[in-house]
Length: 245
Image 1: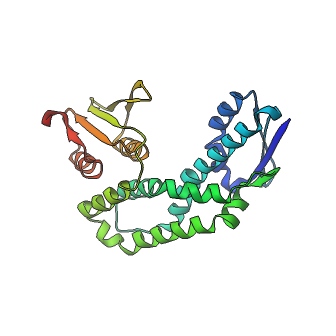
Image 2: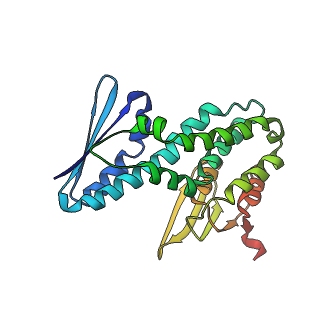
């Protein structure tokens, strides 16, 4: 039997809760289990499976934890570091999500280099004592954004920065289409020979999705009544109107 134990301070409970469902599904595919227990100060997590699946289990653990650090932990860290009173709330949120996506491949390598699975790992301890290189990079980009916050109050300037940041993000999908519906946005695309379609309810959710997925080619269909949203999508993602084709 292979077992790996982790824990995290309750103040960072969001870190584990963000990956618990995915963790459980992936381990179940190996006939493994994930169990957690809330103590007064910390959350204890155990992962177990048959020894024959150990290598696969370790790959799942490393990949899932890396995703956790590079999404939730990075978001929380940047949110506490970014002090930008001159930009709007929606622009602030989009900027943070773009900074989270920025340079994630290089940052993944930093985590992989430092992450060794023994019998036990304190998720927050590893973050604060072993990922200093990562946090230094985040401090630098946060300081750069804060020092230029007055200029980023200008939408065109902010969009230029967001486009630059997105240029360093590896696309997760080749082609994507966004069609305007009455009160939502219909997203269609294909991934690994499978097609998908779903709706997104708000402009903010749409932008965050596009940032996370970073489509290589984006087609816009229908009339965008939200001019600010349309300009931002065209500017950041080089979105093309279907009419122009």
